[in-house]
Length: 478
Image (cartoon, rainbow, N blue to C red; front, side):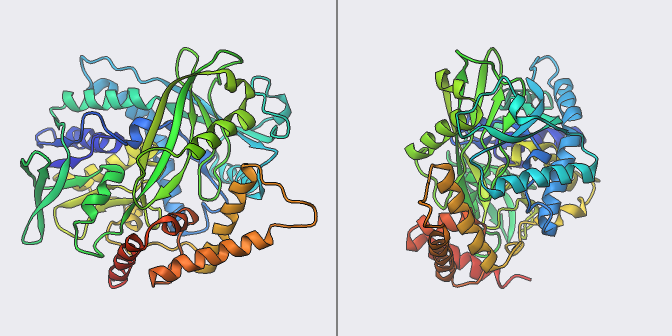
């Protein structure tokens, strides 16, 4: 078996599969430096309920995604214990911290307030403990004037792990189980009579395999492009930039502190690491083709947001390290999990911002599919089958409305102020029209998430035609 990708998902699938079938020969392929890896750049928040928005429960696929996150949250404690046991002589402690404080700033729009309501309602529904927190009594956080928190809640069971430590632990566990690691890149799949039989490396070497698992994150996109059109929907690149800083003034956050998830993006967050170091993130911009690096304006927005909305003392922190990674984003923003339409090929990618958190649950599912005598797979994952048509959770008009909502939200957070005699409707109307024009270019009436519409609106015509071709071919699938 060949697993393409040496990030959190690829290594987790390898470890779980090897634990189930020690006789199985498993090879994990991925460049040693992991360029653009989302796993390396991750803040690795183990957040499930803190990620809830008003849209979490509005569609079966969204509910299935939430159920996947809940299952992963349940598995994390035992998963860390198993990694420690499996690493054998390699002592690889994984730093972690429990607790997540969600704060809503004064400048936030109704979308943020809606997410706070949804978090509380969903936590009550599922019996998840949380505490309402006095937003004016958080003494170790001091936001800038006008950005002070107006609402806050604490989730005691949610927290974080150190992503870099976990990758080391996964590598040690894989080695302890006899998994082979190859520092290279898979350039193409090897097929015979419509069946995947192996993978070809950049060195020209061919690795034969009875099964190939694509778990290379955003890099999976170039292999999807080699498949017959319409077999699997295209993969986009969600760029994220973050940084590690060392405190020189004020208190290091004792646990994860974050703002709620907003339409089309992720919240700001500060994650404690060790010795006064904090991870500050994150950004979320989706592109059809990955840019060479983070945009200056994006970095500016991240820094100003963390200082203004979380703690102005962060402005005095020393920068130790930057992180930049590419998230795997499907056209419908839902993951690709399980068997592909082409025999011998499996997917464990397309997880957007949830791959790290969901890795223990996804690894269990894939291992069940891959091992002889293993389970056929959980039916709850069927909605994420790689050969599906794009899942539409709303109408095209709703998608245009959410695109306008996201644009206005970003504008307000970046400091937009209108005089009293003007309102936002002319801006919203222009945004709706822009969203509809993007859909018209595709030639297929499909409701896409706001961030996907942004990616299409910024791409050149040839790339958009390529996506349109994929959509047209996917439309012929049952």
